[in-house]
Amino acid sequence: MLLVANTSWYLYNFRLPLIRDLRGRGIDVALVAPHDAYTPMLEAEGFTVHPWLVARSSVNPLSEAHALIDLLRIYRRETPDLVHHFTIKACLYGTIAAKGARVYRVINAVTGLGHVFLGTRKRSRLLRKAIKPVYRAAFKARRSTVVFQNADDQETLIRLGITDGERARLIRGSGVDINRFKPSADSAGRFHDPLQLLFPSRLIREKGTAELLQACRSLWADGVDLELLVAGALDSGNRSALTPAELAELRANHRIRCLGHIEDMQLVYAASDIVVLPSWREGLSRALIEAAAMERPIITTDVPGCRDVVDHGISGLLVPQRDARSLMLAIRLLLENPDLAKRFGKAARQKVVAEFQVSLVNESTLLQYESVLGTSLKRKPLLRGLI
Image (cartoon, rainbow, N blue to C red; front, side):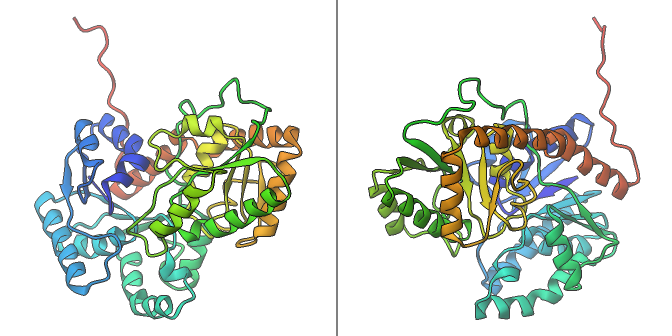
């Protein structure tokens, strides 16, 4: 079995428990991704990572053709029984490569609809029109399955005729370890002074950076004592990333702490009072699920991939997309009502335990593998009592 993505970072951070589980069931699993800083970590776990020569943000036809050919060579050499593609280029090129290599069991995981489907600019509209037939060919390929993280994305691609209900499946993200992400005993129900507001995200505009800064500036102007923690790095491979100059401006504000990329977020969540992510759209926000597992009260937007995690008025607050005033009012509501924030946090963890813990998500994925392969993937029994 091959698991394929456009970065080793993605496979390590989002799919490592699944990959370990597959190995524990006796599956010969290998990975395909561009080599990056996370490749040695995967290799240290004992997994082979076949290098894939693809650039995440490239639209150069020659480079893209080389990426497709490279994947075709890998599939022909490895002859997998099943390939599971994550991220859009892996889905598109992987399905074409699988057909060329006569690999007929394909699962395409849609981790979110990007600017091609959601953008309103002329460039996005033209690109959407041009590649729609490619999406349709990939997501309606014979013996292929398309897995979505939220129902909105699934309905959108079915409505556009890119896939159909027969092939579409819903699996809620990649899951989180609820034993790793759990509330700390000393953080329940008490706010710091100043209040610690956490924004756990890459620094790109679609995450709502402008709206959040506007909301914070309004609160600061009203004398509210809060500190904004920004836990995320610049994403230079993303067209909507903040510029280095904009990051420097953030760092110059003494009420904003730019933490950069944090490998282990548990301590950051524990040190925060409220988690806010005013994203324009998500596949299914891993950051929100982690925060919820740690009983952090959450404010996010009423958009796909965010509202799936938060039940408004029960486990957090939902605000309209790109609405800085509503965001500001929601922050003020929670900071003035710590008991309400505490109730939201407890309800948020209950939802994660019931719906998003990694064991549940992996079991759903394994059931899908069994359906595609037509065989059971039971875990290998441990040999006990041998001397």
